Amino acid sequence: MICLHSGGFTSRQWKRLAQTLAPTHHVITPDLIGYGAEPWPPGEPFHYQQDVDVIVEIVRAQVDPVHLVGHSYGGFLACHIARAIP
Image (tube, helix red, strand yellow):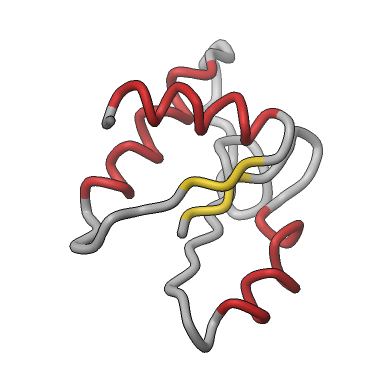
């Protein structure tokens, strides 16, 4: 399961959910670009496709099927990711 946080938050948004699901699920909670541990690249203009591309690579690196969970901006990204990797 990959949980995508909303704008203005970090991956910590999912901490309690990840702890609850840990016994039965592998939960990945990345920081989106410009949040938490992922600083925004200097001089780069914002475009959501950058986040989509990063998460698509995380999805492709998984062996098992992936469930995407997103809140607000994270949900927006999840829809684009699902279209990129049906």
